[in-house]
Image (tube, rainbow over all chains, first blue to last red; front, side, top):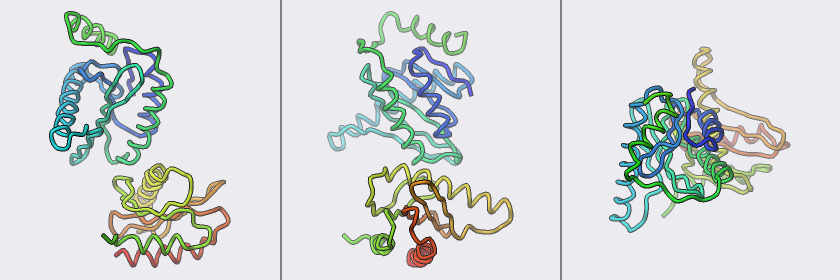
Length: 155
Length: 116
């Protein structure tokens, strides 16, 4: 499975998570949609659209939770005919990421949740010193290009 | 509000050597209801045991052996016994290594009838 990241410290925990949970694909991203790491995706365009949509879905669920009961929704799970996805926040101490996991009948929501909890613990332990959260600004396109190049060797 | 699974779980939990009894969704690996009396992570046991049960059921089917009647996993510090196959629900027990498996098996099969 192809695993690539723009932050080296997330790679080993993500690889372990994907292997143990038997997920097909996983994407670790910032809430803004900036990709931190990916596993199992083969095309840059898939990563770009998945990260943008995942960030949007997560923001929508959070807002829906706030409007319905004043509480944030922590997890999103959707099932399809053959595939399911799980979307949840990862508090690494450095900044708040979200993780999109795609899995099929080889795994289950229970397994994904169990190993996702392990992933969160491992990322918190591996996380370097706190840094300011990235924001979309003038450097966004340059950062996006740099990240895609790091992930796929080309933009 | 009464829970229809509670009497089933309590009857299993009364057996000597039983540390936990769980009703788990086979497809999701999530706990439907459980009686936990041990310090382990019920979610973890449920997810992994449901996955094993599912694999065992599919393997038995692929080998043309029919349905899985009873599933048992013996480990150093305990054993997991499970029955299911009639619906998405799997009934499982976590027991001490020296627990009477024969008795547990009978109780699990009786409990499965109660669930049906």
